[in-house]
Amino acid sequence: MRKILLVAVWAIAFAYVESAVVNYLRALYYPLENGGFQFPLQTWDQLRQMGAEHVGRLVIELGRECATVVMLVAVGMIAGKNSREAWAHFMIAFGVWDIFYYVWLKVLLDWPASVMTWDLLFLVPVPWVAPVLAPVIVSIFLISSGLIVLWFEGKNTPLSLGWVEWGCVSAGGLVVIISFCWDAEIILAGGLPQEFRWSIFVSGLAISVITFARGIYRSLK
Image (cartoon, rainbow, N blue to C red; front, side, top):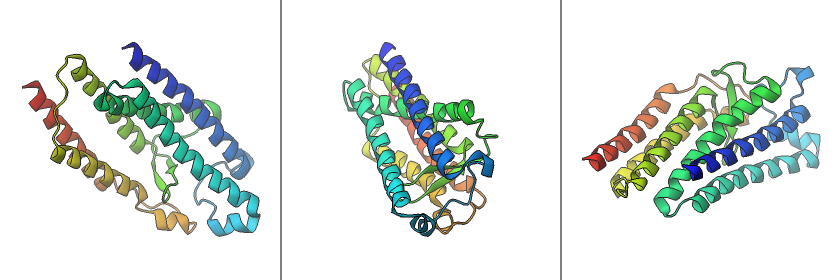
């Protein structure tokens, strides 16, 4: 329990760092006097017209996002005694970090206005966009799944998932990502996000959750 709390505290602090960086970026490219952060996003051509310095900042931002994932994976590997625990701690760290990222943005910028506000989630390899509610739902399930895995580890009865089940869980996650990237081409062209594909999102989430729940049921038996 102590290790879980430490991972959570780390994730909350890391979320503050992330939100502070976003605060600076928005002040630079989407100042409040111009309405603050909103779609459409500045396109690659617009950044090039602004100068090489701004293109360089985009490259730096892409690197920062990749580094964020590396840090979250690393803390899971440090905290876990085996691959299952490492994966569980990563899920907890990611979920707590993502939720508190929005908590800190609300504190610092009074944003988002609601859970249905659209956000730019990720840039690699294409823009991921969705209402804030969608990534928060994913994060809640990640935290819950991580805690369940650790509960089984604590009982010395590891959660039993076969390769097919792990494949289904991963496939469900991929479908969720597809729902986030559905409007990537429009966003890259400087357009507005269309209606979020909740049906795709829920389908992917259901595949992962149902498969994971079957593994839990079998392990409990």
